[in-house]
Image 1: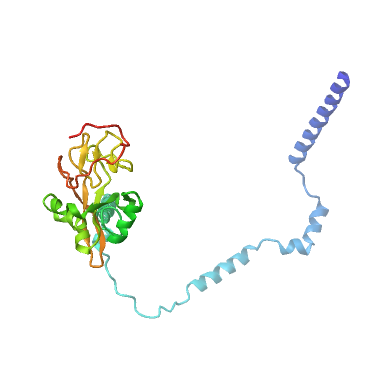
Image 2 (image 1 turned 180 degrees about the vertical axis):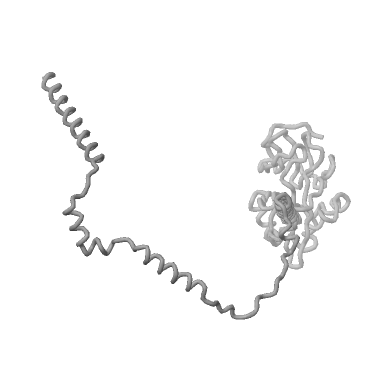
Length: 290
């Protein structure tokens, strides 16, 4: 089998060499036409039609082209007056072009930054934390507070709403500012069972969110154990004061408006205008009372 394969390969190699030699001879072949072939080509109408023009025909065509180029041209009116170009425009060098481009880009960048700063600092008309929020009618809010075991959370204002008893208003008048008292005295003003306190959700100690404790009816901070009664007055723990609160307003229709952009510091340690004690077990471990 091996010898047969070698023989086949040898035959194929010889065929390939002969084909290459024949192709090379065909490419390099140079011959001359016979007299009979040349005579037959001259008598062919097709070949005569493709014959190049004679020298006389070329000269006639060139003379005709020159005669057409020298024909008069109708200008159609006097030439337009000459206006010299602006010397500043044609005198701009490459360096001046790049300098002006850089200054223009810097100006655009600073303008965009300035517009963004103004847009960020511009007071927004939309409601949300940092603006005045119309929470609802005081009477409806009192009902909601009682239905939620004494604590009503409003996430859009990051605040707690609790009821302030009418019997403690006299003490509140001697302790709190007018901005706080508007909601606390709403019960007397509107003939309701109580007023409302709007407390900021953060603990004044280290800023943790203070949750309610339904069993004790106090606010109890889970971070370090600070405790506050239902109206945010400090009752224990390391906090430096009571819970901060928001300024409030009462509208003509009896609605409570809370200004979440105005945070008032909580009352000092020892303030207890309502006299409320823990009404049940604490939710957080006991903290040292102050």
